[in-house]
Image (cartoon, rainbow, N blue to C red; front, side, top):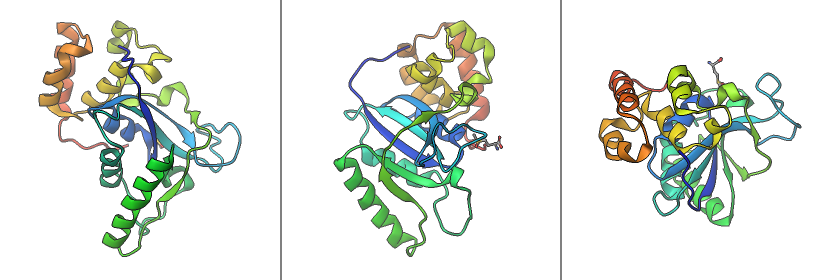
Amino acid sequence: HDVDIPTKKATFGMGCFWSNDSLFGATLGVIRTRVGYAGGTTKNPHYRSIGDHTEVIEIDYDPKSVTYEDLLDMFWANHEYGLTTKLKRQYQSMILYHDEEQRQAAEASHKIMEVRCNGQLRTEIAPAGPFYPAEDYHQKYRLQGHKDLCRSLGLDSSKLQTSHLAARLNGYLVGVGGMTQFEQEVGKLGLSEKQAEYVRRELERNEGGGLAC
Ligand code: MHO
């Protein structure tokens, strides 16, 4: 289940982290994901005591297969960043960059969006500080709804944060990524025929259904 190649990190706050986990998990070039809290100053945040932190997704990606710019495009296309809605700090729109190259790309994309939205953006751009992984039950939240599948694949709570397969399934099961992409990579995922059939059924049932939280 584990893919061992050099990766880079990207960290985004895009509202409720359950759906972002599914969105990026099924994106080609994304190797692993985990959700957590970042962007604040208070120590050891938890879901029920989040302090001034924000729900974020941390992505390990293969820069040879997907660029940071691609991920930024997905960031802007998949959450609410306008000033029109008033959201809690928990759901702050946020780009936490990991190096100078990412900072520049983030600022550049922000400028473009600002023009498009007449300056009405509430997205924060800041250097990535400490990341606090969320409680186990938040990791691959959609996948965890399929207990038997998790069990049969040996996806325990630590694997839910480190496994490539877990990231993929967490997307496909809710219809993200699509059937064509699933069929293209199913041979590499290491599923039995029965497990693959199960995922196909769920994917088909949910495709195009959106990612409500
Ligand atoms: N509607 C969900 C949001 C959870 S999300 C991880 C809830 O209230 O539980 O913020």
